[in-house]
Length: 268
Image (cartoon, rainbow, N blue to C red; front, top):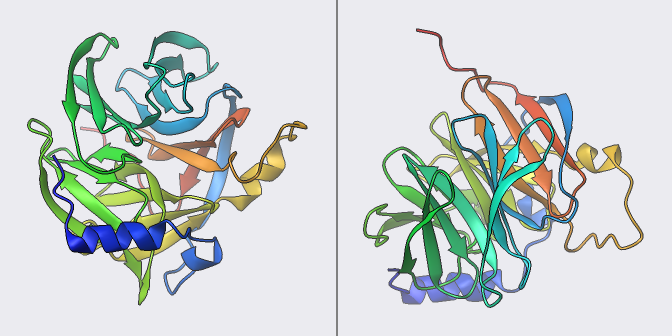
């Protein structure tokens, strides 16, 4: 359970003012990337969490009250294989795979859910503060709450074990959202930005950025498109290929990308 310190409250208050894409620009360099493949994505899914489950299936947590769910999808087709709706009072947020379990957060409700890999509910837990993004580094959970702070969380007790402030040079990076851990680094969507921050977990330093703004040019926008809501969000890493799968809230496409410097797993 999170203990909200005076520092955390101050950070949350500053974050509530909102960070712009310009604030996400700093001293850290941009990484080169190239598009590998375009795949279908459910345009109704308000994507909040994205991760591969180890069986080649895409696990997606989606938000919005009355529409939130946790879904397993076929990666190639985007077809929903199984899903679990959240109670109408809950707004689904980040989710990650922890061994043989799935952990999912809610936004402001202070409730987390634990499932097995077939989406059968196991338990619920409570936490303090907002839930945004969630990832797993093999030892501990890493959670964002929309501020410039990342929290390290025990995967058994869900108690906070530490935190780190995220910054690019002298600039604190607020609105940290969906998270993914890959090759010793935390990859974080920055809300209302087309960039992903690449963060050193021990220090919170943003060592580089991935600018994915060109992806929005690769699909038509419906008349109902809201650029304030339908933003880039969702990062899933495939260690076998070394590629990332990225999408956005209610985007009709999922993109497989290769990022310079991120290698595939070595074969035994």
